[in-house]
Amino acid sequence: MALVLAFGAVLLLSVSLSGVAARTVLSTALMFLLAGALIGPGGFDIVDLGPEHAMVAQLADIALFTVLFTDGQRANMRALRENWTLSGRALGLGMPLTMVGIAVPAHFLAGLDWPTAFLLGAVLSPTDPVFAAALVGRSDIPLRLRRLLNVESGLNDGLALPFVLIFLATAKHESSHWTQVLGELLLGLVLGFAVAALVALAWRSKILTAEPRLQPLGPVAIAIVVYACCHLTHANPYLAAFAAGSTLATLDPVVAERFEPFGDLLAELTKFAALLVFGALITPDRLSHLGWQGWLLAILAIVVVRPVSLLVSLVRTQMPRRERLTAAWFGPKGFASVVYGLLVLQSGIPDNRLVFDLVAVTIALSIVLHSSTDVPVARMLRVEPPDNLPTGQPDPGQAVGNQHT
Picture 1 (tube, rainbow, N blue to C red):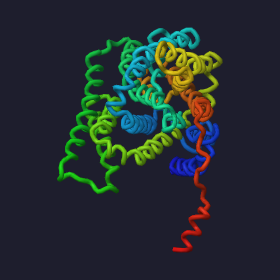
Picture 2: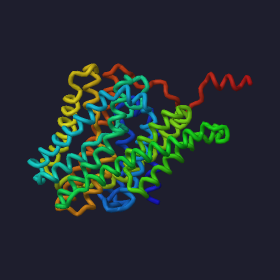
Picture 3: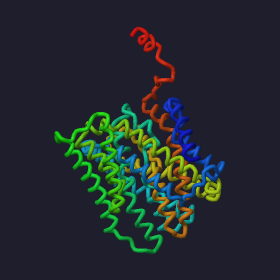
């Protein structure tokens, strides 16, 4: 119950300060991360959570699935086709460059052998735009930029998994099964598309109609079915989530539009819960024993490797320079890296704890940097944060009007 109480208290505080956060560098994501660190073993030890705790992996998995499903509904097939040149470059060139760019300093700075170094590069290659909400969630940000960040992050989570499994098998001196990994990826795409498509087409009949107040629960039901089917069949749940969301937005945009406000809130709740639990894993021991080499590696991964890799992939595109720089900077590490880092920790390879600690520090640093710079970057794009947010006080005009009715 202590964890539930902490979550409720921090949620209340973050909602109350969300107006301030929308105009400043204050970040709700950062508040949950810090709160988790305070209540965890490295703080006041109110909640006893370790990386091996089953709830950690489950929360991260559910949060990532929920975020990808809602992101997929912002990227229908038309949006994917229109933006595929930029997204394809980011995924086909920027992502491999990021893996290599992290693996090389990981070998020389952290002393990891080459298979484990490339494993770390694969774990940290996915991106997560939920920590840049002032950009991805704003309709007044250039559409091309939002779609690039959204599609890239929606697909690279699932695409990174086969590389994680292959390098993990290599580090364990086992043979990797390419056909099995490829089959899980394809099965995830097929499941996500098939379930969403069948339901969306069925909803076109005159018999299957939903009353407006229950319509947002339709996509929730689709997400639950897809999630369960993926775990029963070992299909890739992350590609399935994005495929299901995108398919539903393509075939039934009305339902997707009705679901969006509810879906965004659902994704926020799961994200905040996962952040609180993840923050409890950040202890002084985990931060101190890495030394300057580990911290330098984390800084290089965020400040140098990701920006340079994406800028190289976007060379000779029609994207304005300011938008290219913004896309290059916003490559935050998120829930996919948490899930894959936990997979490495539970694998039993020689440097499993070192890899997880490097992943944890990099993610924590990424959350601090990216979630606190989204508003300044939005201003650089000449988009001002909202300054007319409602308060708890009644509107004077509305109060007067009510007195006359």
